[in-house]
Image (cartoon, rainbow, N blue to C red; front, side, top):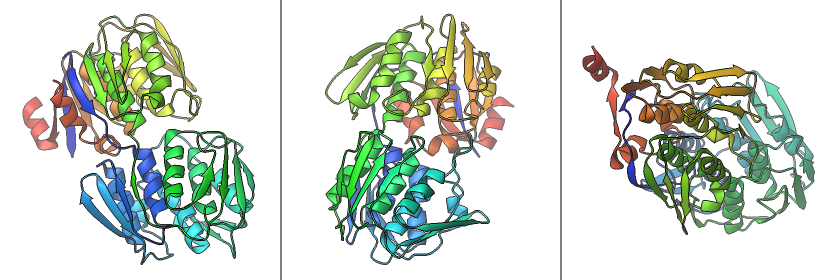
Length: 426
């Protein structure tokens, strides 16, 4: 079992290059399977979730070739309409996108209910509502979902709640449906726009992505294409927060500053100096962090995937901060780990009340999910003493070479095996 060891209180300086967007890539890879040709996808992050998605596609006959560490070639010529491996699907939430991809390609799909981070009930009722509107029937039995139809036909779909997953799946199913599909109350996240742009590059007819109304006019065929994935908004936000937590001076490169506006606005409120350039942002932190209230919301609001990181930062801000998690239930499980490091945080339902402390103290902690793991890294970098983080498999699901990137800007951080940890702290 790998662990991360951090010796904190180092002011980090330098440049970090941001990888491709995890959430965009996890939608675009199954979307490529809708093609009648070969797709070459660039700027793919080298993370474990992508490895799992590639294995999942290979499991149903898709030929996946790694051309280099950030470029993947997808050839769906031998793709089969069959049930993919449960052992793979149970470990990745985005496996549910096979529902839309298989349905769009074969008018039938059958998959196990997906896994991923455990921070609340994440039903797929809105996904199924969209499929039904397009003419498909579905059944659920023993943890498996089966969707099928004779023909997919365009229709109006109103999502009762804004759902990224449902928006993705309906897009995948509707691109080859007959007629016009309109998704109302659609998700507006940058990776939704990226998916729509990718599908349009293959010959789809999609307008309105990035707004709450997306229109998809079905086409008969989709061709192969070359495409480069957008930079990862959440990875970028995490490194900006690290600059603030360490009173450092970090420039993050290969980004789209507009995607980060809700994050940089809060960091400025906390006292971070932000300088924006064409495709980079410089964040300059200081020792005195200001209190701040944060409420997570669908895009363009403050992203739920940045909530643990900002909470970790605010644990050392002067005064009382309140974080309202308005998107997911049970996303404060990591708070107990921050308390082990001396944070003074109380939780009441979806509210976290943070009384800032002068110092966090390094301690053994455990990552409970992907972004919680990032929050613990932030806490460890700003804490006095040594922090040991277990279950870093969660962190590696969404951050490419995080240890190496942090080392390059001056962090005293390393990844080691459990036996090495025992020798070091024994």
